[in-house]
Image (cartoon, rainbow, N blue to C red; front, side):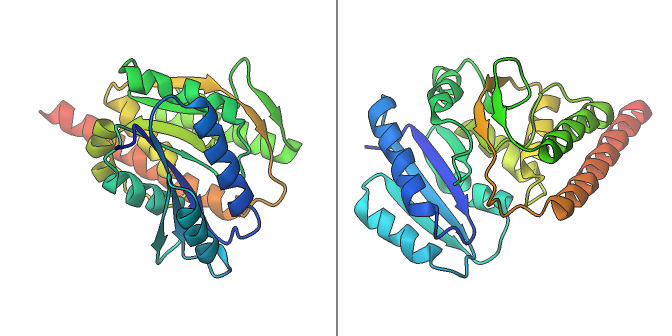
Length: 244
């Protein structure tokens, strides 16, 4: 039976967390999700034992598949999984499962029903419960304020690793997304909002992973370049519209 939901799990050198956390995600979906589902592990060119563990999980659990990508990049991983999936709802979660899984069904339910086009977990809305250090809290809040000031976005949290999109919407937006790394999420959401699509937000419980592989400085610089690029694109469209 074809899955209704395909959850991508992008990974890079996650041999420690991959097995227990995918089993935990699988058990949660088995117990709480009322439709057929799939979990697709996307290995981003790992150099440790991640690939072998992913292959073992796919052999062990009927609803788990895995793919191997030759280069790193969360956006590349999501594009690869989402572009080839036939599930009507596509989602992803970070492998550390920092976001509480109780939010998964509320995340995807409006997409299954057709009420919304995309859905995001948010750590910055009323009702969210977040445990993380002050440095990451400040960076996250400043980044989302910057998005509102520069790109006039309405969504509250661009980078929470917990999102879903209807497949028909992904097919429409993915060809327009240029970034293949961490800015992928932001670019997808900005394009969706500019297209007038409906973005559903779910406040989440979120606990920071102290062993995160994210290079904060490099990610911040890449995000700033992405914001500048999208701001230029917006300016060119306005200039073209005025000229017309």
